[in-house]
Length: 478
Ligand code: SF4
Image 1 (spheres, protein in one colour):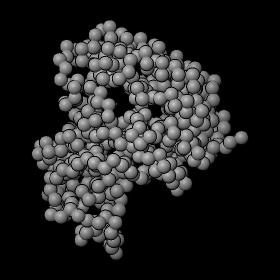
Image 2 (image 1 turned 45 degrees about the vertical axis):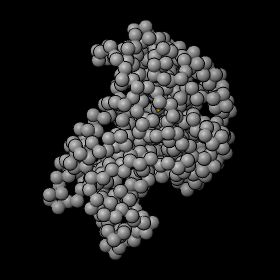
Image 3 (image 1 turned 30 degrees about the vertical axis):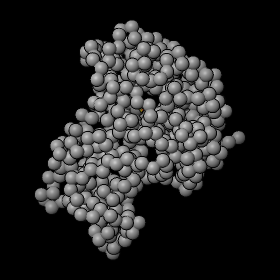
Image 4 (image 1 turned 180 degrees about the horizontal axis):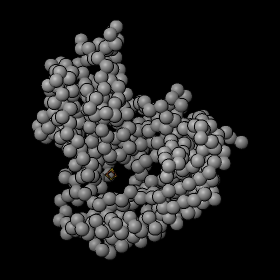
């Protein structure tokens, strides 16, 4: 079976079908389940964008799906288990083939990158599997599947030195994720990412600036989040830097807010910290995963920095931008973590004053160095330590958030929800906090508008405000 097809050469037939390489593609529904990080959600957007020309539209109803895609994550065991269970259930949709419905099922992402053969063998309903570096070839793979190729895997790595893409968006909001670097060279001892996403490769600053300018001009984008497994390594191999990129993006008229994630504390440079002080468009928020408050655990994690270094970076960032809000990630119960080391993490929370943390129990990922360590910790110890971390953080968070009361923040309104039976809108601040507020009247539609809000009350988990000024879909500058 040939898999060579020119996807630029798609004809639309009178009956609405698309004709590609001799195969007709009638209108079909694609359902996608995405697990894990923002990189994966962004990959899903790219996948959907590639499927549009092949006559697929997205559905959120599994039972309507002609094509099911699982975009997997290998970072945590919980997401893995969910995926296996959801993939197992997909056999019911595949069984509809017996009633004459053509249903295809594919698995992509990090688990598919490393386990494609096992997945295809174990799950009979799976038609194909694809890795993290080939998502832009999804059109060819779908063509192959509908042309009759069965049970194939595409998991090759892009061996070129360049990383060149154009951002695809299809959600119609003013916010866009923009990949700037892929892969990771760090090899933290607990992490599977370097095995599933390959080595670091950055796009060029010039390409990203053109890409974002195009998104702002033609797609109404006002806020971008620059994405990568370790964005602070951006451009290192090409003599460029994240700091330089941000200052170039800053010049784009109509772009209002720049975020980036995820950062590695070792690679936060002085130059980047300076940009946090002088940039007018860089968000007042930095997610800086620390993972543990103990330098000895950090050594076993192969994180390359000590707690002293981490705290010094926080101090410098806060000195450069006193309004900045810091969040972090914590792993509870890394193999053989002592009670003393755990207490050092509790101490760090008190010193760092994070606005929020994502915290997890350590989960062993096969193939990593940490998975080969003898480990004396039990599930109960890990669970207790995680609960202690989360309880302390909530307590501290309450104090941090209370400082917001009485201050005015500009938000981009993301939607509304019902709170105790009352409709309230919610917007996200530059510092990444969500504020809920009442509209000026019932009919007011504030979706994707910029609004200034004064915070009236704040707890650890919720923040309420009132409207000071509605700017509309563009910011009014005085
Ligand atoms: S920096 Fe460490 S934790 Fe982050 S993706 Fe790379 S190896 Fe994984």
